[in-house]
Length: 419
Image 1 (tube, rainbow, N blue to C red):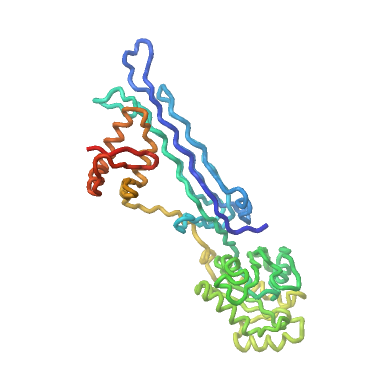
Image 2 (image 1 turned 90 degrees about the vertical axis):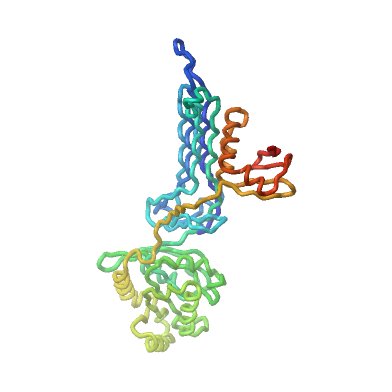
């Protein structure tokens, strides 16, 4: 089954907790802190694999979580890092953040990778907090939670040539004739429901990839028929072949068919019309097609070639002319590049909202501080209080009008405010 869209959940592994320990060895008086750091959590990494052609694997398996880091131990033993989770996707897969729609990566070549959920850093052990004034700290950090998000995968086939035509125009027959692809062929509309790829070999033993994509109808740019399911896959092709039913067996005018196809491409994405193209007047084995071929050639000149996909008439000329067009275009002109976006943002440490008399504090920095603080340790609690004071939380709460005894909430942590 061909699946070209999927929505999945990914989560990096949590960092391991730091350890509180002290040296207790014979002849080592007051050995000092000796707790190791927790290991970093594993990350979720996506890799493009040319051996895959569908997102079928993500239809039922929708949750991907990397391993967490191990906790630190005594004797300054650091925990091992969590194992990364490698997820393979077809070449041509676009990865988007489901909440924002932001493109995280566009994997267009075999082996390209993108980290979509980073693992959390390991918590520091108590030996990391020792100083000249605090020689025996009894606090350690919890591990940082791994990054988590819902992402959307979208597969756009990577093909050199795309076949554009109405249902029953003969696209599937054409690709079955010029390549080893064997799509379903029948005499009714929308026989082809999924894209098919075929490798075409020229007489000089050169090759290119051609995509037979479900038939287009008027209104496809708005999603009519197979609409966007078709148009998504045409975006990456470098040459377009318009296949027309020159015999007009379905009662449509062949010139109007061509104009409609052009219009639908333009309304979906205008730059598609800037690509090199050929017009293939198909079904020339039927006598009524000859007159329409003449009409097309008078209007569009040498771009029009008469063929019969059923008998093979004119197909060799189409292959050679298509390959010549491909040679005139840079190979990567219309293919995406891997885009992994890293944006620096001067993020505020927190924001404050008042909800039903409770001062709710949120923000990545302060929430991570809460998650990584072990509130059962006096030293950790004191460090937490010093850190939020440096962040300016108390001053910001006063500016919001907080009074003695009002509740403050950060994630699941809730406490009363006091001067």
